[in-house]
Length: 307
Figure 1 (cartoon, rainbow, N blue to C red):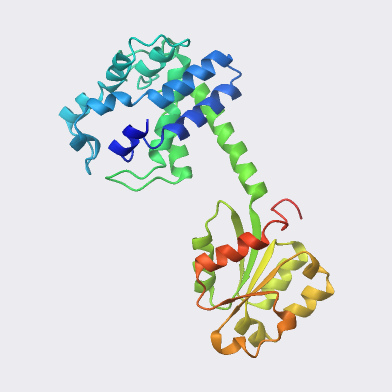
Figure 2 (tube, helix red, strand yellow):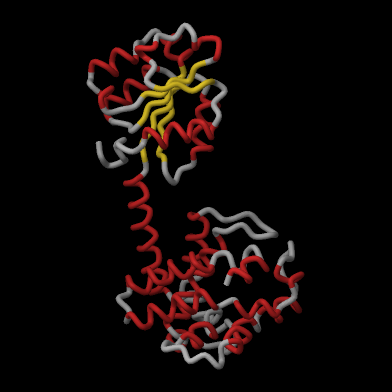
């Protein structure tokens, strides 16, 4: 399918994600393995029929007009037509044909309603819509997960099967909990909260969970109740606060388990005592350099839930 990926940047780039999520929903519903396999293959092949639709329509930067939308609605039929001579061992064709049907009967191509829509199609319809909403489109920004979930819930009983929604939201909740439990905790200390915010935003939230302190007092209060995986502290803030964070850090034994990265200006680097300098990074912080240091240090750091 790489030829289709090259043809269009959106419609064929999310196939694997849609397939994986759809199969996870199917497995959570304890469906037969053969049906799970048919859903996976249908998710990967569902949009192949779009290769017969004008590239200008697929790559348009505006929402589709009526004529273009009518043409787009034919793509499930185009898809199964391309595979009509392939004898799949699963009901792949039915899942593809009906993955744009709506639970209330207003979908296409056949206007099937409720449980007359194949279950694989109902699963695929929901997952595809969710992935579409949370992906960048030529004519709009991606929705946040929270907004996408609200939109999905609004369509319960109309566009989507309420039972499938319930299972899907349960799956997302489990994944969110897993993500939170594996994210690394980082304490960032800097009196310039905009600098800390810059680091937080550029590190991203998928891998790291950050706490920002603007003073050593705040940092000490945090350390009394939590054990972050890494501390990133600005040297000027440490010096100006008049609170020796290093003494607390050493006295509690946290220095044995928490790597300490100091943000140091080029002017101050030569005067900074090497005994305190576990790791350092020059200000202004280069995110690529910081990420490299974090990767080196993060092998043994505690995760959220380890403290």
